[in-house]
Length: 100
Image 1 (cartoon, rainbow, N blue to C red):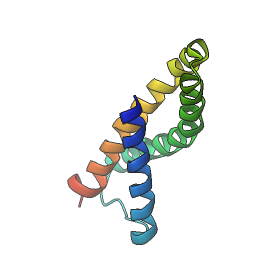
Image 2 (image 1 turned 120 degrees about the vertical axis):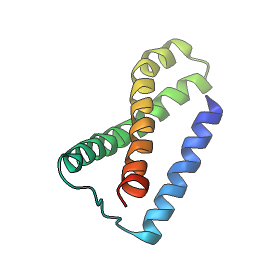
Image 3 (image 1 turned 30 degrees about the horizontal axis):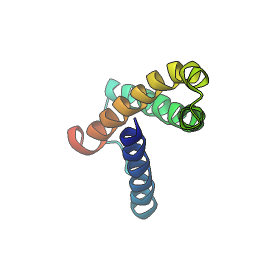
């Protein structure tokens, strides 16, 4: 889990740095796929913002060996984290690989 946290942190830093330098990249898909893409992107962004404090609230009790508190929040944090991870890959593929 520590490696997953470190990897996610490194990705977030590289993602923010990239978009700071490059700026906005338009989605080029057309038709119904635009609706699918923007719905997925919206839920991804909202849940990523929500998930960041949840991750912190999950990690701190674990680091302090308060595992009961850790387990209570982790059961909510993990599924959101997984959703954000999977939709992030799909958003990337749709925007940079499939519809260029």
